[in-house]
Length: 336
Image (cartoon, rainbow, N blue to C red):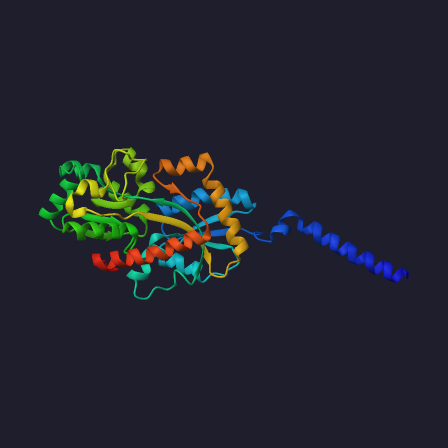
């Protein structure tokens, strides 16, 4: 065997060994992630979408050894942030904390949606589902002698337009929960849309608006602190986080039979993102949501953790389109 042949074979072996060592454990799983990952929240800071994203970000940062950074991009009922992710490279470095609004309601509400909630995204996992809570500024409720949903309906009907209804934006689940209530009860409230739940809550607590159908996690602290009065939860069953607060259906009588308007939040990536990346994120989210610390934290806020598979999340999104299209049509809700 010639020395030239031996030298060449040795060089090849050395190159292969060097590549293997450089890859290490991460190489066995693929190069992703080798830089920070952005989680776009399509609403302002302080709302439930933001709360859940910020609960997940440090867990994913620890799991993958790279920073997961929350980026709030509010506007147009979540459409601004969703469009950013829909048009981002499908390399796993831009994710969306999507909602029932961006992926269940908006296609029926907006005549020209700047993204396709089905074709433009790869569902990763449902992070959590939450009920909305029908709540009033506590001082305003006391001044108007409104102690429950029945009192509210009576006052709203007798004083059409005198109550202002805050929401996280036109067409969001918070807005439509209120619109559905108005339709079913024949009451009228003036809608005031904000750029997210956080700013809307500030005005509700400050007395600049009267009522809101907010996601429970973002309102829990103010309810517990007595700043807001919870009249009812919008889910079909009572929330374990507020066991003494009735459902809207329970408290509202025959006109609200069948009322239900819960919200959900989940991670999505641009369409075409590697299934390996999608599955790795889903597995780590599910693992984090299963830990006592995270699970108890979310449940204390009224959220129900999930972490389901990409296929199960995709099925939920598809079914939500059908459900909310009917609600939008029945309520007559329009984008301001």
